[in-house]
Length: 322
Ligand SMILES: [Zn+2]
Image 1 (spheres, rainbow, N blue to C red):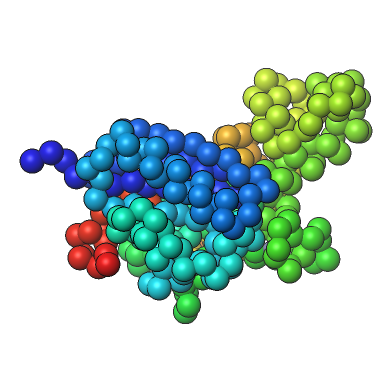
Image 2: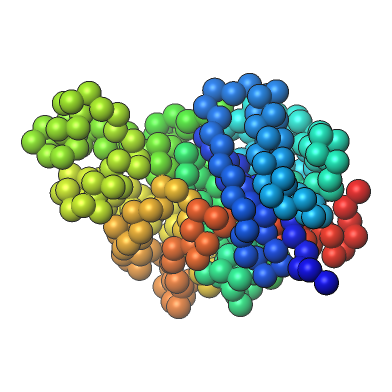
């Protein structure tokens, strides 16, 4: 019997990554899309196109799992609210399964990354783990007592909207919060601090880039930091330190065995994680920080896609798909 396959789709604030995934979590075909400024209908069309593209390469897929950047009622399959995409109040599972003619499951993107890392990634074998996904914003996932924790109505684990700074910067997107973790530590924040560093040091690589009129975003700052530019390294050190203070609260609240840091904005690797580890080692409550590991995601940018596929397989096995 050929191995079963499903499609996993991971959607972030600006882009989508999808793939055909088998039961060993091997990815066979990939698809990418971006959607800056797309309205609701266009966003749903992009999801549909992406699925159809990989499905054409593997017509035997049995279901589709979606991880989306939204507060999702996972049981009802409804996207309740989204800070980054026009998906408020969308009966996502119903809409997509009708369009695709396939069984569909949907959950929050942070939860899906957590599931992948807990099953077979950087948090494998643990019963208490936390996922922090640094992208356009920050998604979170909680693996507590060996399963995903979603909260009373399924919309919990939004670690990106824990307040880190009193009267801090406004949270990007539609979040009514100010000084949120996401406003201070995401890819967006790295870009903003990069702009500030560039203006302050016109002779640095960052400064010359600003001078020549080119855009400075989180990706460029990270790239220059890996190249050794002191200004860019200082930005990652500053943001890494903030990350550490955010993680300190998480360590004290949940006492996890491991915190997995993933997402596109985590490409700084140890340039971000080392300052974060130092802050946690100095400021988290001693018994909670003992033995704690803070590590990069095993699946990198693909954690959300792999987790969405894992959830689709789970639902097939439980027979819970409509
Ligand atoms: Zn917020």
